[in-house]
Image 1 (cartoon, rainbow, N blue to C red):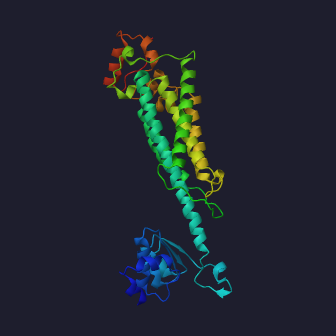
Image 2: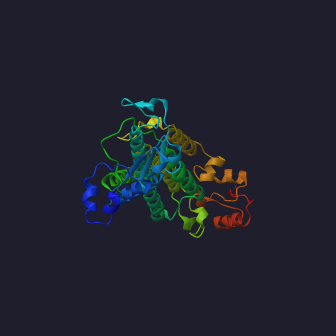
Image 3: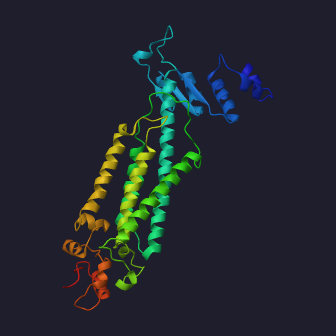
Length: 351
């Protein structure tokens, strides 16, 4: 009754901010206490062990039901009263104890830290993919292949973040609070360092490529492929190097962002992420260290027209060497048109 009389009066803010105990509260009174604290912009947590706490558990930002099956139906989090919680602080405690609140805070902070790491990873992914496509367009008008984009969109954008969230929470509660600022110093530092590292890797890879003896520049206008043929714009060395650099770097970003911090345990305890990155490394190295296989030609890396012709692939491989091809009909352009008109036509040049 005293609480009901206090509601709506100018004394409510003064009392609520200084009160420590609310005794003999009915279920609706508990809800009004939670809502009163929320009205002042505070994040409210509620612990309860009975059915009379269900409404307040539901109203709070974070609700923890302890040992009550009725309360656990509506609370976001719940714990059963295990054998270790039957006796606590000199009293029988068949409904559990508040020590589980510590476990909830540890788990919640680990989740927050992991989610911000995934957010930083997605920022790096979007910036790097945009930078690569823009740079390839400026270099020689080329682009990544459709299979490469599918790989980046599925494996790098979905599978790796799903593995990142399998991290193990810390064993103790840290005094540090995980950041919740989407563009705070920690996030900006992570993204900027990631972007700078990729630019360095990408620049070194392109310089090494351009100074290699096997390198042949790719000029779409000389070969006879026009920008409207988007499926042909990835048959060159620059696109291959860009795809491999993106795969290696994003895998490294996922590992770095999942490293141990105040709220998570060691990286190697996240077995799902370690296995996923190892599998990604194997797939990428298969493209790099093998050649003239269906796997290579699927991603247009270390591929050649002979392999595509043997596989009767509908998408011919028209690489930079095509400028020096000869054909029975006379020009490379006629060869490309023939392959476009007949998917089973031989893509390789005639002897």
